[in-house]
Image (tube, rainbow, N blue to C red; front, top):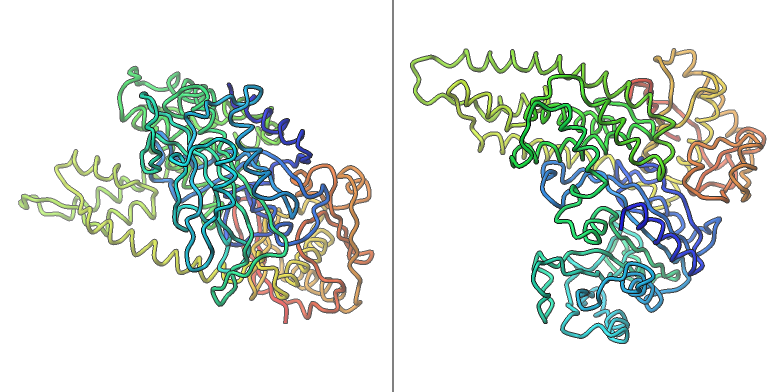
Length: 592
């Protein structure tokens, strides 16, 4: 079964169970500043999991594009991916454990759907602790479906608990489904630590609300949030050892081999480089399709890192030409049926991919010169020649040189690299980044607090004010809201003048002073756009959307929390306007 068939079967199955189909949300979350990217299908649904009414009802299903950056260094093996697709279905205060588990079992084992053998399935359930009891409801559901007790493992919160997304909020136990992917018959007793048991689906039961005091009172609205990885399940259904051996990656790897000077297809280093490039450029294509361009902070920086790491890996394949745009074209062709936005942005993606590759190739030359400086400072008579960890990390941070490239270059010159020193410099860098992220994301919009709600409402006013001052080309490219300030990214080719910033600030404050009411209505996307609503995120909500109008000032499609009148907002002040990436500006502002 191919991935396209898996996606469609999943959608058809849950449509038959009364679920409305919602489209994949953008990779850049609109209303969740706790993450740079959408890392799971639930992220765009946080307001609805917290109790807001979804325009399409209480049962939802989709396939969602996701991206996680924590495993970038691990990509290249058989399981780690940066970009991936997640199949998901949700119950927003409707059905709960019994129905969710029955649906999962039916879809996995019924010949009409995936037809997996029940003899090769096993599950885990939450074992319970001082915060919440053992999930015997989930276990009993599996037993009634015929799963033997020896194939049900009870696991701790570390393994079978989801959330909350931040420090507080909805959370609960989950039950995970595993499939035996070994070459021998499955063992009689299930051991989740056996790597031949591959996790293929996760049903999360959001039934508690973690408070800031660390308590877990029951939620009034109990939700179900499930996730199944397209790449992993496709490989299992096709009997392939890795998702890189499926049609999701084969065209890309084949194209790489066409432009590579390498002739072998069995060299482990070559295979590893091919996989890294295929994964990283696939992620880069999807990020760029959502309007992000390479830059030095946040999402643009991650994008830049992915492209540059791919260029470094291309050296191992002896690719001597500009190649990234050619690979991007192959990726767009493979995914456009499922994600039409790729085709619409293909020309821009290829253009920006080439520009970044050209720029980095020039950077490599500069980095190589810096490397030669390090070498030249070491006296020739010293027998044990070493490049310090500090210098190796400098090459990585400043020029994008992975340490393995520095090690290879050093070896050619008779040098070694102080890897312990490099690891320490890298650890310190990560610690600083972690502290910065904790400060940056403290008190995010996901908590729906009064302060973040007001700041989110203010982004609507700012968006419209920018369009009035700068022109209709202005589109929101992302936002990040903490309890202290808002950050708003928007399309504009040049730095704003002081006069323009003063005028934008004046317009927003004028709307606040006029005490305009905020109204809400649900309409189809077409109706909303025909009425002049800004529809940047319209594609993620499905057929019916919520439209928030601020008097006669602005009208915008949105799913986040809002105030009832602008008089509650306070005085708006712009702190800073700066570049975010090519063609994208950033404003930081506060309410006083």
